[in-house]
Image 1: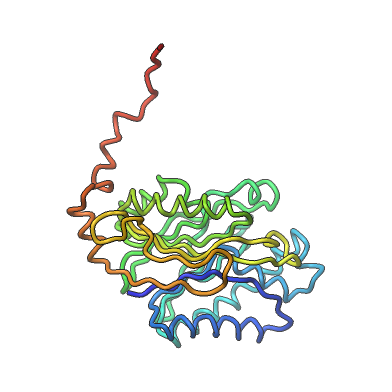
Image 2: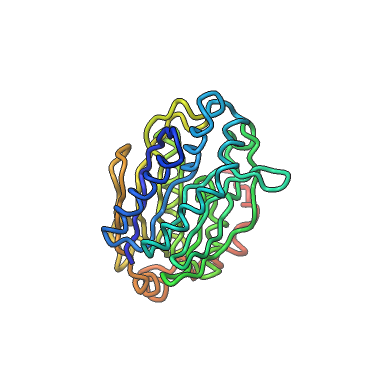
Length: 292
């Protein structure tokens, strides 16, 4: 398969057609390059707040409400594009009101028109302390014609047991949509994504928001780029970096992925991290104190 992962700049829309035109342009470009799977970043849906005007877009509660109220309509746009272009799309995540709490939800669209979503599991300090966003529904495995796909939204990629649960459920690809303000945030998520590829002997696909959007709350500054990572082992680059974009530069990053290489390295790699995971059991209790 070919994956396309986005370094995505947020825009300001004056009407709904502006949003539709942008999404069509991005999807058609990637599909035109032969991409089978498109990955948009965390909180890309925040640009929908612009449709409610500057005062609301700049307000904490107002921006969440404005975006959540428009998610169903944006999902319809993305679902139609997935069907039209015959691609799978992980849409940009957005804050969504889910009964009595707000969750960070990334929608997933299939060429058939089927749709599901993955909620973020573990909130950053900003999300939990300032924004009031809570952990959502459970981790999922998306069974697709391209393979078994899991999603770890940004901070989730920094927690190995979440990725381990996906690996044990048979995930071959883990998508990592991300939103990071500063360069160190980008590297935290990237290092997490690369470590998860190493541990699970799988491929991770990271997408990022890029650029400044000072008129929309919580996404005023964004740093990142697209990246695709695998285990540094036989059949993969020695660095583990299959493809990467340019930091801060908008656009798609493309990579060809052969699932047979994932299966081969899991079965007979130079190391067998996925298989040997359980060897940690019995060795991870409280370390003994030794006086020197």
